[in-house]
Structure formats: C-alpha cells, structure tokens
Image (cartoon, rainbow, N blue to C red; front, side, top):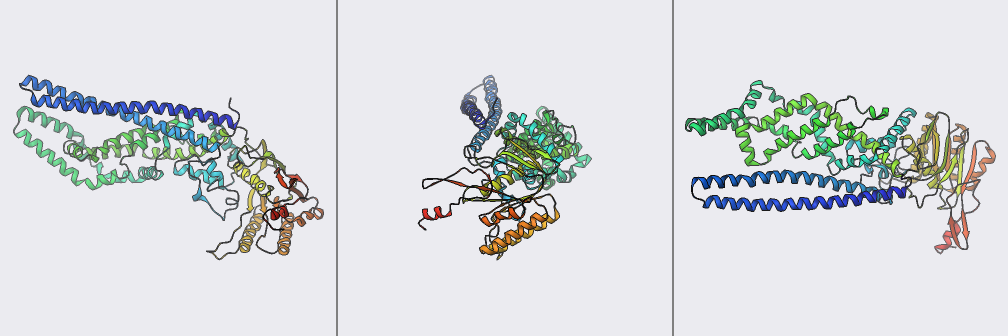
Length: 602
C-alpha cells in the first residue's frame, strides 16, 4: 500500500523504467521490419530481372506470380509496422506521463499548460494566491490536453461552488482516484495532439458537415456511385473477353467519372477540409472515450457526463476509417485511379453524410466529455500524488478549522504546517511579525487551500472544516504605468472593491497583507485602523498581516472582535532562525535592524 509522497515517487520511477524497457523492445521490432521492407524491395527487383530475362510462357507466368508475392508481403509488413509504430508512440507518451509525474513530485515544472492565459489581476483572489501562471496552483494540478479540459479546470479554481456541487465533486474525484492506474493510458492517448485540430473537427461535426454533404442527397447520384464499381468491373471483364468496343465504352465511362468528380470537386474539397490526416488523432480520442465508457461509474457527478447510454467510441473509429479512405486522394496517382473507376471521393462524402446524419451530434458530445474527465482526473492525480492530504468537510455553519495546514506549492521537505481555527463569531485576526517570518505565506496558505476546497479537491492539511466563504484578497498591489495608476491609487481601488463585496456578501472572508504601503506611516495606520473597525462593524472575518505593532492594540478596544497572532524569529548568536509557526499574541521580536546591519547599514 502506497501511503506517502515518496512511495508515489518510487512507483512512478518503476513505471517509467518498465516503459523504457517496452519502448526498447518495440524499437527493435520496428527496425527489424524496416530491414525486412528493404529486403523485400531487393527480392522484388530480383524477380523483375528474372521476368525480363525469362523465355517461354511458362517461365513468364512463374516469374509473374513470384513478382506478386513480395508486393503482398510488403503490404502486410507495412500494416504490421504501422501498428507497431502506433504502439511505440503510445508507450513513448506513457513514458512522458510518468516522467512528468516524477518531475512534479520533485518540485520541477509540470509539462502541461500552466494557465497563464487565465490570469486576471482584477479577480477577487486569483493573482494574490498564485492560482494561474508559472509556479501556480493550476500549474501543479493541470493534466488536461483539450480545450474543455484546461478551461474547466480554470473555471473551478476561479469560482466558489455551492455545497452540493462541492460534495458531488469530492465523491467523483475520490472515485477517479481509485481508477488512477488506468488514467495514465487515457492521458497518453491524448498526448501530443494539437488542441485546435480536435476543436476544428468538433465544430465540423456539429452543424457544418451535414450542410457540406447536402449535395450527396441526390438520389440518382447516390445510386450511380453505388453501382459504378460493379459497372466498371463488368466493362473491364467484357473488355478482357471481347476486347474492341467494350474497351472504348470502359474508357468513356472512366472519362465520365472523371468529369463527375471534377464537377463536384469544390464541394468535395470543402467536406474534406479539416479531416486531412486526422485518422490517428480520432483513433486516439476514440480510445480515450472508450475508457470513459467501459467503467461502471457510481457517482452522480460523473454519471451526468453521460446524457445517454449510447457508446460513441465505435462511431469515432468508423469516422477514422472513412478519413483513412478519404486520405487516398493525397496520392495523385491513386487519386486518379480511384476516382476514374470508383468515384472514390464522392463515395467517401456519401459515407460521411450517412455517418453524420446518424451519430454526428452524439460524437461531438462524446468528444466534449473527454475534457470534463480531464479536469476531474487532474484533481484525482493531485489526490493520488499526495495521499496525506484530506478532503475537507463543508459545513453549513460559520466555521474554518484547519489542522496542520500547509501550502500546496511548497514541497513536502520544506513545508511547515500550522493549525488555525476561527472563533464561533467573526473576528479580525491581526498577524504581526518579523520580515520573512511567514506572515504572507500563512495568508496564502489559508486562501489557496480554501480555493482547493471549493473546487471539490483535497487540501494540504490533516483536517479541514469550513463553510462557504466569498474569498477576497489584498496582497500584491502594484502600479500600472500604462493606465497611469500609482501604487496608492491601485490600493484604494482594491479596498473599494473589497468594501463593495463585503457589503453585498455577508459570507465574505478577507485576507490582507500589509495595507496602504504606498503612503506615509501615519495615513497608513489611520487608514488600516479605520478599515479594520469597518470590518468589525459588519462582522467580516479577516486575516490582517502587518508590520505595524500599534494595530495589535485594537484587541484591547475590541476584545471579542480582534485577536492577535504573530510569527517571530529566534536569534542564535548573530544568526536568525525561523520556525514559521503561528503563535498567540502580538510579536515582540523584529529583525529589520539585523538585516540592515548585514548589508552595511547601521
């Protein structure tokens, strides 16, 4: 039983080694078949020389038969090699998945998107809590490769779900965590494909394809396309037997077929556009969808992702087969032969039309389902990788109780956990302390774990019980030269936003780190004091980190509404040591003087 992060790391390292061995074996097989293909080509050349130099009908017939053998064998070898190369690519992707998990557990960069595109400095908490961007919560969690997958993850980190949804999502993530060993193959099937490509295909399968193939609804055209292979075979056979006129008719019909193909060439090109070379992508997505279909899911949240019981993976594989047939037009010589004698492109268009009319919408929904599973799998992987994290209890009553709460973006080896509990009534908790002692990190630890909790995810704690809060933060306030906004003006804008929100939402929870840095110390104190008293009046729970020790005196004025906490330092000789543990009461030890002396000031 793997119960710790180091155990998980060892497991991934073992899985990666197994994949490396499998990849090595497959590589040898692929190389061997490449050698066989070259050998068959040389044999074919030898048989051709034998045919050219032979004399007599019997010898010619024998060499002609022998000439066909390498061709058929070559075709079989190519098919086998293509299968092996597909398997080889899958195992390479699977190796990447395991190596990526190893990197993430070692504190290195996640190979998936870091969510930079979703950054929003005007949001209530995203920028302050490192939710998106490099070294962010999103960068830690994301395992999505599809557009819906990355967008769904971003959505659930940027909103606060209601209690029912949070509990349902917790159950779904727990269920997926139990199947985590099979999710790696699911992810490997989706690795390496362009997100825009599958989005183009989904758009095409929606409303476009039926309109584009509407020209194939002509009954006479469909009948002729269906009969033309038999007609050409009959005329060809007649030409072989009787010669003369039948060959002329055969040629005229072939020319007519070429003209029919030319007449419809624009419509055919429109139908084909977006599908070219996508059979491999569709097959991989079909395998991923098949994985979602073959499990008997128990949780309500996952069941809702299946509006019908119909399985669409087989339909996508059928679509992939049609695309493979359609791709024959990419070979100029093959294109001419197939269309002159079989009206191949029109036949493919008719197949696509029939396919789309029957299952097009269902397949589009199935492709969307992949993204929703990716989002849940991202959280399930987080839960699996950190078995000591817990799913929080979402309470109806006002509460926030966290035991051994740590910051999820700090590695296990460096992480320091704290226990923190709100009183039964809302308070403003003022946190004083030395520079670098851990005040800001503690505020972000509380906030980022609340974000995880509201997404239905596990939190970095031994236990957490909390109610639904409207999370508001004031931490990284900076100026904006483009908008001619000074730091002080930016701070005022943020305070105005918070005051508006707390008036609208009685369940607001505020995190403030060093308020009004952009002004003088007197105005800073007066403004901070007035803001705290405003929050006390409207009973808004707040964590307020500050260097201003005077603010801690507010506890004497408001003994039931203000609490003091601090982070301090320990001096060992001339060296400072930090334990990063929160303690009761205001801070009595500061380190600014020591730090200034260390750089030659004082």
